[in-house]
Length: 516
Ligand code: XMP
Image 1 (cartoon, protein in one colour):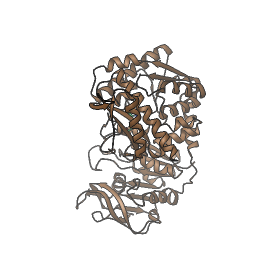
Image 2: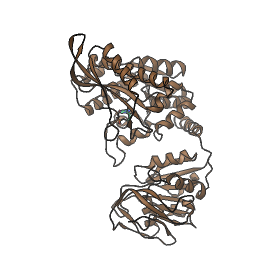
Image 3: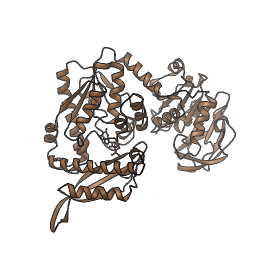
Image 4: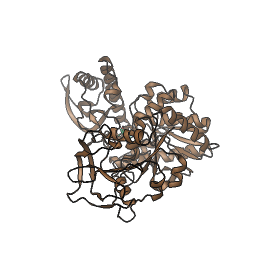
């Protein structure tokens, strides 16, 4: 199997680059620049190397550098943004701040003939985000593209097959970005397009079978797509040595606990230990309003519950989690800002006495996880389930959480999901195709209503439905009014305590998908 190395210099886009390569059916592996040297790269047999972008200037103190020997291996290299500057710098070129100022966003690109630009028109649009640029080309290189402010928007040493682009071919705003990446991996590196998800499953199972032999692994099973897929994947590798602890924190959706237990435990034969810990969680959440506090408390309580279960199970070596790539980014990777504390990332192994953490899906995007799940034979209705956050309904009950509010939300949420599924299926649309996630939120605003001839005073419920591919950005779903009408009418009629229903028409950004 041909593979490409994505050498990460701290950019935000390493996964996106890997994903674009995998989408071409070529396997891409990401390694931090400090984790692998020229010898390791040569031994691994990569067909090509992509240097990612990064937040630094090559002249900054402690800026990531690359071993010059990597460029002498004879393996083609494509440097992107910082990677492009680093390539020039390492080969003896000069980097300086752009005289015309930084370039950000969509920029006109003019190219010359080059294998990297096969089937790319002479003028197109690329996406830029840089302050520094290559001022003096290194010996043996020629400039192959320019923009208004950047005389070396791309460079090539065709003989040594070393290429650099100042712009980002991996983002969709670069019109011919996919073509440029294709040219690199197929034309220049000579990769064959023969990688499929089955290979990911096979290699992951084989890897964990070897790495985890003789170990007992505890997995935090939430019942969502991610942890279920991670569980089934690891179960394939180590069978009964995987202990799936399913914490029912009392913040699950209607009937969810039983469904998870029956499907994964019953049909798929996983070793599931269900812990009913509702009282513990609700006691700790009493009187807490602040979203980050809620998340922190739930995260901590999870650890305690695991600790208690771990004690009962005896020696457990490792902790497994269904963390996927967007969780990693949103919880702060390197210099990226922390948006929300996703409780399933970080923290756990330091606090608990585990040798380490196992996250088999850490590099995958959601749609890739679903694909793996289906290939593993997990029932379609589970794999195609919409995501559900670890802290559960706690982040969908705004303000203080009480059992009564949870009950209201559970019923309303079930009605909304039922009506949406029914309405869209009836219209011949796959609900998950048109909205990736849809749910209800119980706000802490009470409003006045009228029923019969009497005044009512109850909660305002918000409905949220979003369209997204990867959950990093999302658009509010333009649902048919009939669905909204049926949901609103049923909720206000069938549930005592909700007087008003509103629909959330905010995209992400500026909002997040969840309200808290
Ligand atoms: P946000 O609200 O951050 O949500 O835009 C993006 C996606 O992540 C889910 N989400 C979580 N998933 N643990 C999880 O496993 C969490 O703490 C968490 N918080 C949000 C959210 O439902 C959406 O799918």
